Length: 123
Image (cartoon, rainbow, N blue to C red):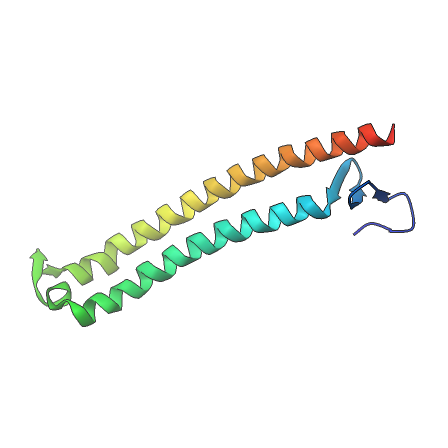
């Protein structure tokens, strides 16, 4: 955090801004960042949890999931756990990374706009 008694703390009309070099953080911008990242993380976490929980749940409720061979002696459960689950995890990790990069890019532009607005107020 910045020094609230020195030049690092800039008071604007509605909020307190903290300057880190050329970058300015406001309470509102930090809140937007936390909300967006939390939404992204919880969404992907919920999908991961649901799919992982579905594997044993299907074994309890659907006998053909683990007892009926579907291809080369493999059951649906074995095929999913040995191959498809890893493809799912890698795909989810890749899409999460792309979504996080996209979110970071959007938030960077928002931070630049706030910095420009605060620079305009000081002048």
